[in-house]
Amino acid sequence: MKKQVLLCATVIAAFVLTGCASVGSESLRKETEMSVSQKIVQGKTTKSEVRAMFGSPAKTSFTDGGLEIWNYDFTNVSADAISYVPIVNMFGASASGKKKELVVMYDDNNIVKRFSMSEADVHQKTGLFNN
Image (cartoon, rainbow, N blue to C red; front, side):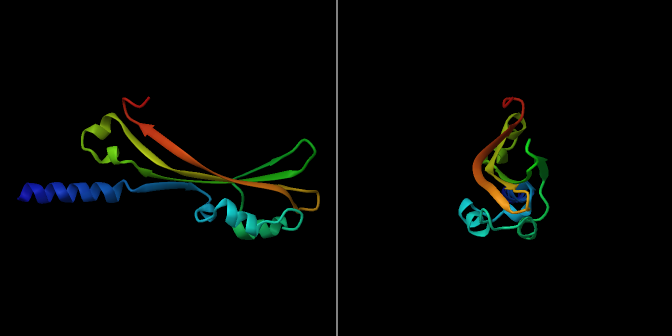
């Protein structure tokens, strides 16, 4: 009986400790393509309004014509079931989740010229047999 309790406690601890991981701009966590399209209006929304909504961009670049582009990204993954199997997970574990990316281009007057929000499924694999 004690072994069963110990095993159960170990499995629960593994779920808690390896839950999920996220990286990037937390401001995108709850956003969708639809919600962003309701917040940003091409030709109207300003650079300062975008910064107020989403914070500072993760990356800034410029077009050949000198227009500024801001990039935001957010990735959230959770361990797949195989990751919780003792011993097996040392040889191959995986995680799945979503990646969101927001790209905003401004005109010469710091008004949104174009923007794009995308969401994609992501899969990460680790271990000896997942190379």
